Length: 468
Image (cartoon, rainbow, N blue to C red; front, side, top):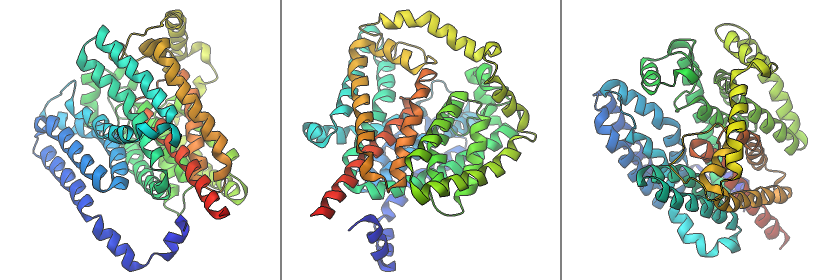
């Protein structure tokens, strides 16, 4: 019985039973939300510095063991909201840097190391060996980081590198539940876009005090705009415009293939907030994903997407050409055609000129936790992992991409599977300008790569079952 048949055959009583069965999961999530909210209102931000990541980890473990579908959604929301919660907590209780609260997202995602350990002996048979190869490359970088640096930075860094791979592997090996994960993630990103994009536009117009204090405290105003209304580069509830933009890419792509009228306002605010980030690398990645999605879809679904794009263009273009949005968006768009006078492009060119030779000679690598972030995913990977770590990492990644597109024929009738491939494809050119394979950006990349692999395996299995 396929997913559609399950939905058609489900009765109201079955839906009630499902709701009752998931009640403990909702109670755990709501309990954490209530505790966090009360601490924020009471100005107990210092208390949250330790109790928030501990609470998130405890709830995540409970969901992972008892409600695995809820665990995936909860993980995404922890990544979406934790930086915002940190800023509000610091606003009420004093700026803390580095903030222990930011450990919550990687801690929650790292729980999938259990899945990795359990399935490691059969990874080759299941088709998950490429994930293992990439994980080996990161583990090598961690060992070098322990030798060349300090344990704490190495541990924190390796968590941001390895947790997206583990999360993608977790989604892949649970391919039998792919229809449930598909539905859950579509719903999660629908609400994720509505909440974070709406706040992003509000952030641009108002510049809330907690965001301004954080921007001044971190001294990021040189690259993220002025701490004043209409002066910010939008980063919404996350920690940087790039991070927010890389969430809007899959969010809006999934809304394009969704159903219902509620997705239209989500796409509109999502695209507008993406433009307000002024992250041209992400704009390019989004365009690549969108063009790829149109190519991957077939028949009536493709025509519906093109029609929806025309409707969205009619809604978004006028908004982006009137104040208070026009000046910042048009200035950034104009810079795309005037690279010689663009400081950002010049800085990146200078970076490649200064670092490329050293990167090509970096056989051993500097190791995790020893380097400052670099505006190039390729250079940062080689410098961190060295060629000894980069070769297995990239080999695993290339094998996954090959398998993803080789198996696409079995899932041509599944728009979500096409969207996962389009999202993954759109992230590849972004590596030249930003490291989008770690942290929350990496969660998107590896997560949808894992989902795409799961879709291929699920549909291949369904095809075999139908032939019997």
